[in-house]
Length: 440
Ligand code: HSE
Image 1: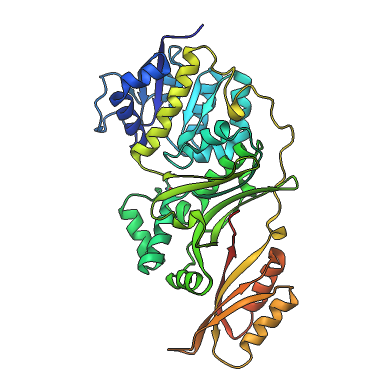
Image 2: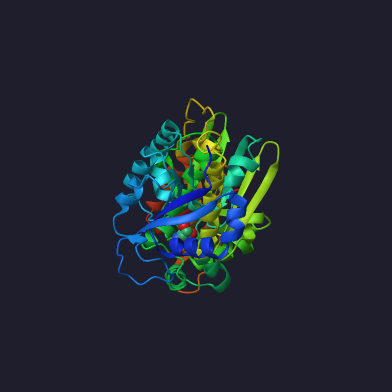
């Protein structure tokens, strides 16, 4: 039997939680019409109930006792917006066992405990919705689960971390250094509490893990995702990439399936400046998805922020509420949490050293005879063929930057060549090595 009132328990009332309450209040009549039921915010659990809030809630609705919300038998749906692994994981698992449906925006939790949450949700006949976990307001989860369900997904290329994309855009367009651009991004409030998660690629890797697990109906172990950040880039890399070779530099989250194996990686990459993703600038996110029937599609929008993320969370609330109202919740759900038989075998992740692509190398070398030929010999010895070299005449000091673009090479060979070039006495400091992606 369905229900005419859906009671919601909210865990966490930070930026996004506040946005969710705002949206539920402002659009109540429309949302209830779409859900076919009344939506009642029953309880809100927070860490500090005495903290002033930006939205008015009836007295007694707020509690510091999250467990009492999870155990309240009158609550149908738990909205988890605490973030992080603990205590969110414990609360979500307890709520699932109490047969409550879940809406969460917790990318870390889903990325690191996908199999556990999928298993518990299916065993208990509950649905878990997570549109807010990837791409803020962009409806990418729903699109992969429903809109593209007729396809075999071939590849995903995502710009899914607004902070890094903002930083890269400022380095590219304004010539800012990495620390200058990071400071600006933090001032604008884009960065995570720990900015290392943004600039080191960890946040994007969480989101990619979720997208890949969903799109390829598999469980991607988070530890198997190759992750590199943007910390070593300089504004000059953007100039060389664009002016010498016709590329932009983006932090890309990439998943591809080939011959039953997955590539799952996050790293800065050179992307042709004609690619649709090349124009995704600032704090915007975009996810480029290639399906075998649909071809290439791109989903674009604000990847973070109070109201964009609330838009995603409230749309999830609406889906669950409607399913409960029509008594199909947990029986006809979509994606990995529905009642659909699952791919029995997880797809293996291809080791990074088996990757083949073109590379961009930037190094600093002494301006003296024989240096370029020594570098070229090491590359040749490792089957790496040079496509282009840029070396500008030295203006000050005795070192010059050398930039090399290669043809396709094997990652294993490229990394060994990089180590040997770095150990040449005439080569100073570390080599910056970027992969070149066609993005298709
Ligand atoms: N710090 C994240 C970003 C927020 O910059 O995209 C949204 O997950």
